[in-house]
Structure formats: C-alpha cells, structure tokens
Amino acid sequence: MLMKTKSTGCVYLGEELARYAFGNNHPFGPLRHEAFSKAFYRQALDQSVDILEPVTGTQAMLELFHDPAYIEKVKQLSESGAGYLDMGDTPAFPGMYPAVLTVAGTVCDAIDRLVDQEYIRAFIPIAGLHHARRHTAAGFCVINDCGIAIEYLRHQHNINRVAYIDIDAHHGDGVFYSFENDPELIFVDFHEDGRYLYPGTGNANETGKGSAEGAKLNIPMPPDAGDVLFMDLWPQAETFLRDNEPGFVILQCGADSLYDDPITHLAYTENVHRQVMANICRIADEYCGGRVLALGGGGYNLDNIAKAWTAVVSAMIDAD
Image (cartoon, rainbow, N blue to C red; front, side, top):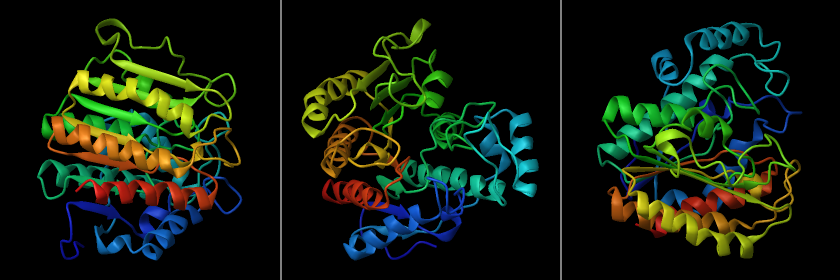
C-alpha cells in the first residue's frame, strides 16, 4: 500500500520479503531484513522516502529469465522444504516458491514505478540474488532477480540498454555469464579476487564475448582492500558507464564487502556504498531520467547490513 508521497524515492519493507531466508543457523538468515529495517527507522529515513509493501509476482516473471523445468523443481522442493537446488550451496526451505515470487514481483513492481516516473529511485533490501543461473540455483540464490529485472525491462518496457553495477564481495557470475554475449547489458563489477573467494570468477580479462566484447568491466579486488583502493579504481567505472549511456541503472549493493563480514575478506566501510550510490544517481540523472534500482544483495554481518544499506538509502535521499 502506497503511503503519502514524501519524495522521489521508495523503499520496500515487509515480512513477505524477510521470508526469503534459509533458517536461523544459515548465513542468509531471517534477521537480515530486520537488521536493516530497525536501522532505517532509527535513523528516521522513513521521513524522507515512501515505504511500500512487497508485491507477489507471477511464474511468468520467473520464466523471463529461468528455464521452466528449473522453476518446476523450485515449486516441488518448496513443498517439502528438503534437499538442495544445486550441488550443496543452496538448500530448499518450506515456502521457498512464494518467497521467490515475492522477490521477483517486488523487483518488477519497482521497475514499473520507476519507468512510469512515480519515483526515480528505489531500494529493495532482500533482493540482488546474483548467482543463480537460468537453469539452476547457486550461492544462496534460488532465483536471479537481477536477471529477471533486465529481461523485464526489455520485454515489458522496451528498455534494452541497462547498466548493472555490482559491489557485493562476490562476483555477480549469474548475471555476467547469462549476458556475456549481450552488448546492451553494460556490466560493472567490483568483487574480491576469485582466487580467494566464491565463485572464483570475474577476472579483469573477462570483458564480454562476440559483439559484447568491451561491454563488461570486471575489477577484482585483493583481500583486505579498503575504501582508498576502491575509490582510486572507481573513476574508470564511472567513465565506462558514461561512455555507454545507460537507459536504466541497477545497483547490487551487497554488504558483504564491508570489513568483518564472516565469509568474505574485503574491508570497505559503508562510505563506499554511500559514494557509489551518490555517483550512480548523478550518472542516471544525466542519461536515464535518474532511474536507479538498488538491490540489497549479500551481507552476513548484521551490523554491516544496517550500515551499508542505510548509507545507500541516505545517498538516494541526498541525491533528490
């Protein structure tokens, strides 16, 4: 339900989104949504953005990116809540299928509102599931809502030239390899070097294939890389984005690139997330009517989730 309009930005919050989680003992647990939500209200960010409820999507939305046979597997394992969707990284959980429909539906609802100019920025905390491939889950990602978003922009809104920026500690391999041959998907990914972290991909020489060669920018970071190195390297990404003139911008802003995440080795502060969002908003203002969709992504230290994602929302507000 849409609250009274306060700004040009919106944030989606609700228990339906929080249900995408793998249990209390899993890194991707149910408290991630709550960690962000509490910090969001504590900082009074709700006074500057509209809060929207999650939206249930459709199987047709999933099929924009995923193979129908894989979706059927998700539906079947959702009923039992047992087994794995891949080789052992992504367990099934009860209610999994309704949960992924909510993630996909919320992402597509945000796109509709941005394209219709109801808002120009949107943030969804439980989204940015960037590892899943068209035919399988991977790395805690049952679906790939980033890929669904790209396909939805194209099929529903005829926006083909999309910039996807990813600052999660893990390489966005599910997005990269699904669009590796696509010259219209402009891809920028800062991630921990694959020699040290899952999924082991995203070398700097991976720049796209065929007609898409040069349309992808992978920037692997050494373990313990912090804000100074990131900001030294960021200008090449900004130049790359401006040279490619996107028609819509998606930011995957995983919080697992902050210092002291339990499963990664980067050492950013939340200032990286704040600066990236601010810079991306400026680029979007120049090329695509300001339209930026930010997706929470990973992050397994609850304090870091709170800091990184509220920094993104704060930058979104300040950019208005």
